[in-house]
Length: 546
Image (cartoon, rainbow, N blue to C red; front, top):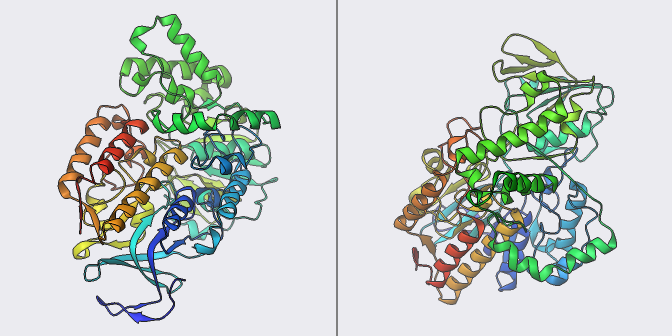
């Protein structure tokens, strides 16, 4: 570490074991780039990660079938053409092992490992008003003094939902976000998967042919799009690499940070032409129908109803069985107001004789027993393996699990338990020199190709810290008025969408007691970037520095 001499801290007598200019929490997509950027401007930086290696989401989520649903050629860092062109993907939507290898390539090429402390959990971070610095403690006994604290913990990194009795289960039980590195054997076993969102879909379609018998516990049916995932030849790789300059200019300014964007207005097209656009987007085998067909699907109930009807029609054609259609096709919310998954023969898995649906909407799971899962009607479903694809405490959970305390000892966990507020998803009033990525009220909370949004946030944070240091200042913090203004702006846009009217993790509805607010900024990636740039260009108007 930068310093190892033990010395007392002025505020509480704690003995500091190391001192840095900046501490980055997390070594995933955002954390690796943040470490690189801050180090490049000459700061002494330490990144800390609970994992044994780099990757963040792509280190932990190694469950069967885990893969991109952003195209591989856009889920990349774009700050270096050499770095971009030095890696070739094998297919359009690669799987977790290849993604993890890519992130290790990044860490090696940028020589980042020497400044990362692995296998370490950040337990607390307290702002010391006397020194105007943060005191960070870890489960390894580190007490680190740092001027800046940057959280790169990921927006989907805090696993959510446990059931009474889990500890009594005599078989194997796994949460998809904490999957073991060692292979899990499913052959001939009775397996239960709880959850059928994006993650559950990937698991179910992957293991259905391996298990003895599979029970899928379904609460909320999902709209979905069939993935088309061609392999890439050397020529394909060279073709997408030749677009590097185009991508650097295009991705930061589209609505969701993808290469494609909304190009059609619903009202300006005939019904026949609308259908052509919808079919073309559907046949792309990507998320194009969701985020590049018609923007009106997010705002106009009639447009949403027509596109929803189209997707239901496509799903019915594949399922055929009316009972399966009732169980697996949504009927009470619209397409695109939940996270839309890509799938590969997921629906066909339910035609297999060894796959069974257990509806738990009206008959919820009550507990886990030593032998399986018990539903409210008293039925015990006997199982050998239970897979929890139950989602996350999105956006906030990773930070509220750390004891973060700002001015006057205020607790971020307590503050966010009352009202989820940030300033552009980059800082929080009352927490000086704390910078955040992938937290609420920014596109990176949900509606974005993550690399596009995380790179932008990392660069804004790096520039802001550089500004503070150039001016020989110590502290930067958003004003309450600036935060109030951003929250109001965010809510005005979000509440005009159909997302705000639909229960899902996009509103935190999956976490009991979580304040209700659309987590992601819905004004678009390009518009968000422009607003962030305007703040920086104004000398950080709305932020106090001293």
